[in-house]
Amino acid sequence: MIPVLPGKRKLDPLAAFLSYLLPGLGQIVQGRIGKGVLYFVCLYGLFFYGLTMGSWKNVWLGDYSQQAEVQILGRKLPGLLKDLSYRREFAGQFWIGIAAWPAILQYQTTEPLPKPDEPGKDVWQPKPNSIFGSHMQAPPEAELNKLQRDADKRWDLGWVFTVIAGVLNILVIYDALCGPVVRDDELKPVGGAA
Amino acid sequence: MTPFAAASIYWDLPILLIAVSLVYSATRHDRWDRIVKEAANWIVRMVGFLGGLGVVLYILSTHPHLWKIAAAIGIVATIIYYAVTLSLFRKRKKTAPPVAAAK
Figure 1 (cartoon, rainbow over the protein chains, first blue to last red):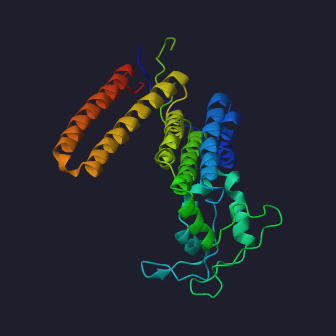
Figure 2: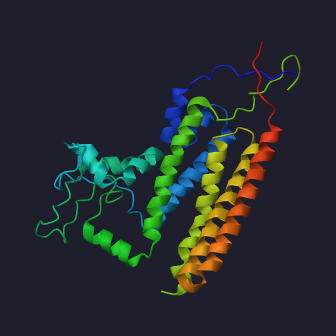
Figure 3: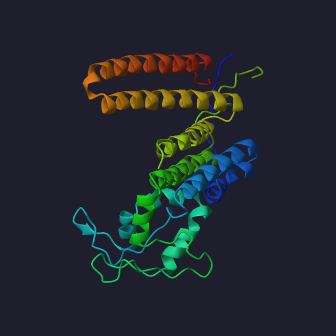
């Protein structure tokens, strides 16, 4: 029996997009239900476990337009890139899909964080969103300090969990787009049963 | 805060290990037996590596004068770690037949 090389992989952008929205949804649509459920349970489990560890206050993207400029290679970062440079964790958390969208809505609707030297910044509180309230809203600095001081190290470990869940979902999206790295049908023998 | 509660973040790590191993392995294979086997291998590798590192750092932080013992444990653990993981890799490679071009 001679094993043959597999044919060209077919890309499935729709499944990839569905897997971005909900981890594993693309695989379920493709008929790989067990794997889809595994992805969903593991990644949502990891993401929400991390959120719980961080008192539901470790996934957000703040508006840092009032803060000092950030320069990379001599160029000032504009708008969203500047905000992401202040809050890099969200670049990983974003990939978990719909579960991180409240943070994007809050980012669009919440007023900018006060300047570090602004009077009254310690008592500043953002207005709750009409739909999500304070869920995934950038917390004031005083509240962040309190969380990190009083909640042991679990608050920090919590955001690490959420970032890992988001980054792992990139692998899941790739799996939905073009299948697993090692395909089980790669070594079909010629002229005989597998 | 009690010492037990202070160390409680370590009880959260198994969830991370299991989820990461399962998801990563599932992106490499479609067959469940291979997914489970690869995930188990990754769990062993990560626990071995992080556990060994933890033991060495614990000895160094609590008994700094025992750094020679810590170094010896680190070297032996590294040799065992690579011996075990390389044998796991070798076994997996043996099961996969070589790919030849179809003509």
